[in-house]
Amino acid sequence: MFYKVKTIFTFCVFYVCLCFCANAQNTHKVTYKIQPINIMEPLEGQRKSYQDIMRKSIEYAENLEYILLFNQKKSHFSQKKVLQFDNSYMKDVHESTVKSFTNFYDEIFLLIEEDSLIFKRNFFNINYQVKRDNYDFDWEIENDTKTILNLKAYMANGKYHDLITDKSIDIEAWFIPSIPIKTGPDIFSGLPGLIVEVHLPKVIIKAIKIDEVTNDSIKLPDQEVLMNYSEYKSLIMRLNKKVKEF
Amino acid sequence: MKKVFSIIALSAMTLSLSSFTNQDLLIFEAPTCFEGARALVIMTDGQINLSNHRRVLAYTRACEAGELTFN
Image (cartoon, rainbow over all chains, first blue to last red):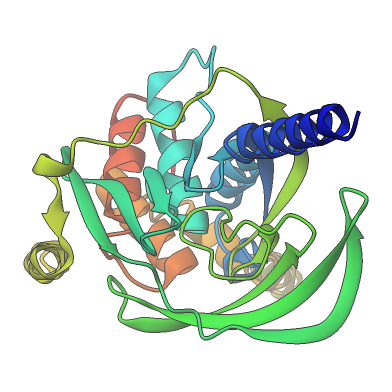
């Protein structure tokens, strides 16, 4: 009798562990939306045509969605494809404008265990894929809390150095410790929980839903074609000179 | 009569000139597509850099295709 109970107990423990491991590998999907801020102020008193262009880009930005797929080991962040936009010229206008609000990479893969990331970025119609260490945001967790997606979120302040503009950018982020995965939208990560809201100088990024997905795996780019970060820095220096001639 | 006419003419001229604003003057300074694109990006971002140069190109192309105006 004792032997039977022991076998059943062992089996139960094994089953629970198996479920936990399987669940840990499950991929979750976070949908983010963006809200541009401080865009119209510099255009006050300027041509109406300039203001109209920016208003339309803000409207376009507010309809965009960004997707973060994540599991325990890695995550992938990208913009959701926009379907049915007839005018390719205006699509390009709005897409490039929104990019200057967010400064997001085209795609970003976070290797959580390795504490590194791979990003994709296009300059002058050439796609670059770069691997680097995770950004160090020097996070300071504050006491402020609020409810986001029915979960308790904590505030943190941080900053990072933008290589292109050579400026330090202040960030306010909100993260959920009850989802203990160190990832978030774009480059923002490193807090003890999923980052669900980020305040940047020109945009606020907010998570609007989290779903569990069964068949969306995160496929990393081919490691052999990756540029390293020092090569990327040199590239930026060269391209910055080119842009200054603009 | 001549005096009255002069006063009326002078008043009309003063009134029409005083109603002009900077916005009205902009009508006479229509920029080229590239100039307009560049000016708008500098106004919003402060400078042209690697993060926004694509905007200048996109605005210029859209303007040259008649989809966008900087007037």
